Length: 279
View 1 (tube, one colour):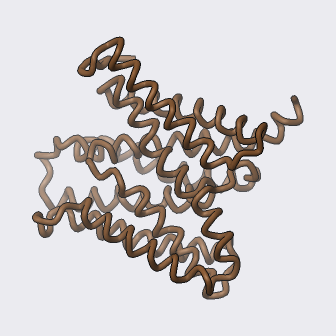
View 2 (cartoon, helix red, strand yellow):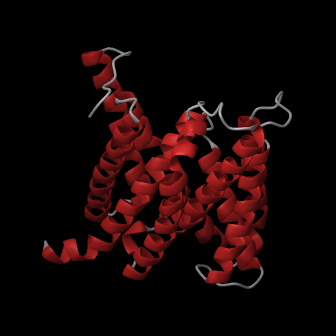
C-alpha cells in the first residue's frame, strides 16, 4: 500500500494543481457562456505540438512546447479581440469553426507525423499516472505565475465574466480580456501536455458546473470546484491504477457521474432553483 501511494504521489499532486487552476478558470468560462473554448484551445495546443514534431522537434521538448504556445496565443487573441466585432456571429460559432479546422488539420497530418497515431491517442487521453516530480515542478511554476496575475487582476476578470463591467470602456475590456485569454492559453498548453484534451475539458467544466449548481458565491464556487475535482481525480486514478483502465477517460467518467448525481440530488432534495449563498 505504501509503495502504491508513493507511486501515485506525483499524479495526485499534479491533479491537485490542474484542478485548482482549471476549475477556477472554468467558473469564468461558464459565466462567459463560451463552454467549448477549452476544447478548441486544447486542440489548437495539440496541433501546435504536432507541427513542432513535424519540424523535427522531439515530443515533450521545449521547442515543441513553444510551437504549441505560439499557436495557442494566436487563437486566444482572436477570441479576445472578436468579442465586439461582427456581433451577428457569436463567439461560439468562431470557437466551433476553429476547433473543426484544427481537428481536420491534425487528422491530415497524422500519417506524416512520426508516431502520429500514438501522439493523437496520448493527446486525447493523457498519461497522468506517469508524470514525474519534474513535471510537477514545471507545472507548479507555470500555474504560480498565472495565479499571481489573477491574484492581482482577478477582480477585473470576475466583473467582466459576470457581465458587471460597465465602469470599463470597450478598449479596457479588450485589454483585460486579452490578458485573461493569454493566461488561459498558458494553462491549457501545459495542462494538455499532462492530462490530455478530455481531462482538460472536464476539469474546466465538470467541477465548476458542480459548484455552480450549489452556490452563486464566487469564492465558494472555486473552493467547491477544487474539492470536487480533486476527489473525482483521486477516485479516477485509483480505479485506473487498480483495474488498468486508461487514466484520462476514467477521471472524465468519474467527474461526469459526480456532476449527474449532484444535479439529481439538487433537483430532488432542494428543488431546481435553490442554491446556497454560502458554503
